[in-house]
Length: 412
Ligand SMILES: [Fe+2]
Ligand SMILES: [Fe+2]
Image (tube, rainbow, N blue to C red; front, side, top):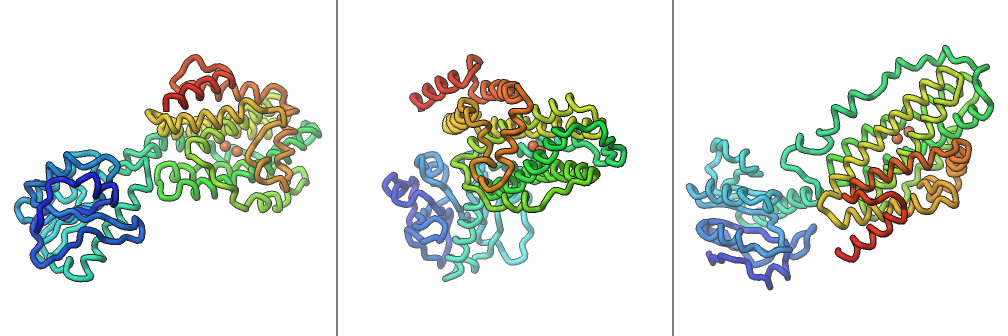
């Protein structure tokens, strides 16, 4: 076997994704490259165990160590330990080769995140190509998630789960048979209809989150819970209307089932949702304060609280992306500027942009006009969150956001 102690920059630039073989593999012939359906040309490096540490130390920036096959009997645990000691190679998939058939899996295999223990015969002939492809496939799954954590419970989803789960209201709290129609004003019936329809708009939102975050697990797990809560919002208001003899047509949900174009960046998409949740929360809060009908007062109060919880959760996921990442800060601030600065046409909610054939875009504007001052109050709250995301206490207006954006982009 040829022993290389370092990967030269030329080879790394030509084939940035690398597969490494450590230790002697009798009877196995390796080329310098292999082809992968996911990564194109992939470079193959070979070395003896004593050269691994230097190889890892001098591994060029911009190259990715995707899969490592480790052979060499007693030297194997130390080789795997050296690899796992470096956090930058945490996603590299490791296979131990040359294990006798039926051998017990040692405890360090789980500690060092070894993918599999293989007998030597598994690397013979065509099986070698298949094995490399399997490793690259596993690696590909991990690199698609920029927020990947080694352990499931280290994810942000797990961190916010208890708070989110334990603040959910109970469906039994809603006593629709106690509502008093005489206490409800005509304009409030209109708001109810608009709000029930607008809440249908969360369906494409849920579809799009899962499409846009495909390959990721933490935010996607939370998005499922978010979607379930939004589903209650349209249903509870539609049922209230039903008690009044007013039927909500299904077409309103179907109008928004086409997926809308995906956002450019996760941070931008999250900011858009921080804003729409903050505004929704404020509208419900004001509608609840204003009505004399106790059942809808309770419902709107609960929904206002839900939207505030959603706003906060979107903020937590956004903060995770923005912390120490200028590109994500820029994307979030750009989105905040677009939405907060230009309200001349009313609220620019995605529903208005992407579903002009649906009535809800006009509905949002109507609610905005009727619930005077609510958008200002919500946007004030959003500005506080933008300050924290940008780590700049001087941001108080859209103009300040623009100034901050300029300085971030100049220093990027
Ligand atoms: Fe909602
Ligand atoms: Fe919401």
